[in-house]
Length: 342
Image 1 (spheres, helix red, strand yellow):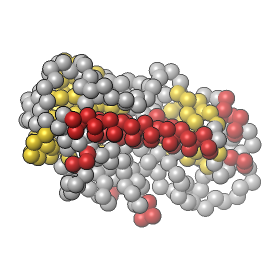
Image 2 (cartoon, rainbow, N blue to C red):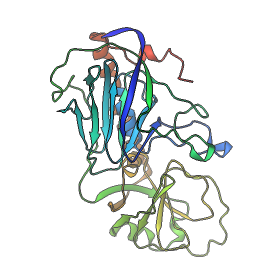
Image 3 (tube, rainbow, N blue to C red):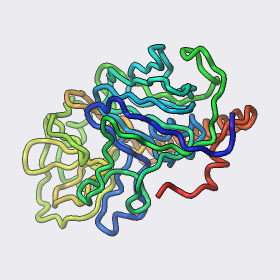
Image 4 (cartoon, rainbow, N blue to C red):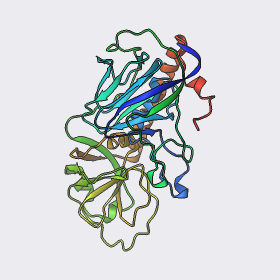
């Protein structure tokens, strides 16, 4: 139920391979040479925040591999999204992609992620953390790593004061949650033409019929894929320029690079395709060894799929707002009036 806002302590017991504060990234930072950054899987991060009654832009925790666990010193409302994983509260299984009531002193564990690279943990309320250019997203090159370590004590400002829900394996509410299909096999990614598609003879046919594998050289700047490529002809020197997230670059070597949220400039490499905006969350979950194929779609189809993805998030927001209001749980319409954590 909702009460006056209080500060809850969160003791980090295990921090996985890499855990950081995250949100949806920086707005209007790239004209200053700073990547937008933010959650690699924007869909999962957004849903986690919506499910606990936050604005989708709120700060959450992104975990990559290993075991992440914490203990709150007061009741908290959480949601875990992203790659399929085992979530437990005091040893009892808890559902992903649902709001979960956690009592004071309980140990929450997120472990054994599979079929993807990242999990997102959101809390009803506001996590206390610094901001860089208005965002909690890491920017290590600017001395803003945002890494969460074992033994760290996090602070959460929340109006949540507990809600009776003894059976953690059952959903707290029946919600229209748009859960991605984390297929155990080959992933299929939609793409559209890039500025140099026509300069690479046969690239459309090649990308449409061959399978590519994410390599261990991939990082937060981009995915590096092993597979056949065609080098564009007759382009001369390409002036380095800004480029959207999801651009397919062909460098001088025989590999394909798909740029991520921490990309900067093209380094003069040709851009032969773009992943559609609706496909970007899955690319943010791709781990080394993941195989993928590509499907060319029209710009109109790409726009329509993204609009439908966003429509489903809006429907979920409206449903959560209605339910939380009915049971007097704190939700985003109240939190939006609070200043961001400094």
